[in-house]
Length: 207
Length: 207
DNA sequence: GTCTATACAATGATAGAC
DNA sequence: GTCTATCATTGTATAGAC
Image 1 (cartoon, rainbow over the protein chains, first blue to last red):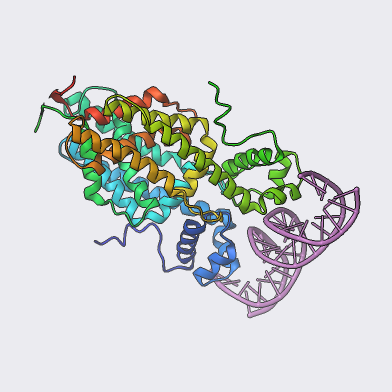
Image 2 (spheres, protein in one colour):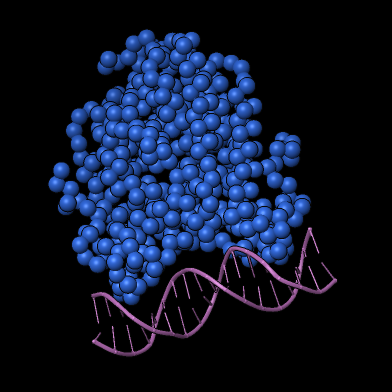
């Protein structure tokens, strides 16, 4: 898979080990209850090392979010450059988001908690940008699809939300029930429902 | 609206004031960073009062979740007893969930954080049951709709997730962007997309 | 750059009076 | 039932050696 290049953090250095340890602990316990002592113990270093690299507990937390978001943004950009029908491109975009989520579910859980939940004592961080980036990506494809007739005429926003909802619900299901594997194929089927409709039809263009 | 009866907590008693204050603070700051001192100050009482009624910080947190979930479960039960076509009943169920969410967004945010996020130091609590209750409610209606031909034949689970996703995305949008008002009408339109499909059709039964 | 040892503030919880 | 006063613990952060 040659995913070494795309790893958001390098695990070899002291700095990288601290990040990996902090991600795991923030993910499992949340920001506030995680102590600096736990992080440095898990990373096999001592406290001053963390303060040397990140300045504070807030510092390492912000570093995690910043570097992860930058990584996700980059991946999302390349995922937009695909060919095919709008329906296929929307399916691929959702699949890419989903696979990103699966490969980095620890950070996603953290971002999700920051995005929807109480700040839990963590410093403010604008994670909205990632969400808006995804919404804009879907919306742009939907707009082109409606214009070209590949998608049903109607509100761009509503169609965007329906597709985003299908993608989110699959990811959130795994977030809350890790044992319940929706999988790429499950996501595709749920999106098919949104494309084809839950109500019955007589005939449909392109079928 | 005569919603006084359905309030999950009474605000008059000392106990009720403590619950209201704790909900607001847990909602704004999260469980761990909220201190007992802050809660009692906001409620206008002193620390031993909280320990008298709830035994501990964990105790008041669990009381909030337990009483809120019992309330939501009851509301969901009555929301299931409606008449009309399956499509209309599913629309009404989603609208009811949405209005519950709007009237009690503080608790919902708390539940959401517990459900998807890290435990943030809070005691374990089975909030999954509420989610499963909603999923089961939708699923049961979808099953009947497919059996009666009112819904398109296909996977019950996939259709359920598509409808749940549309509902969730509208609530989550307001959770993260309180200024962005989707509203009951917005939710209805997004659900219409799921029912009617994002792809174009020539003709559809019942239109 | 990374360690040992420590300073200092804030927390959850309780004892005992009324 | 509700208060005042207090305790033991634990947290983040730093000073200074190497």
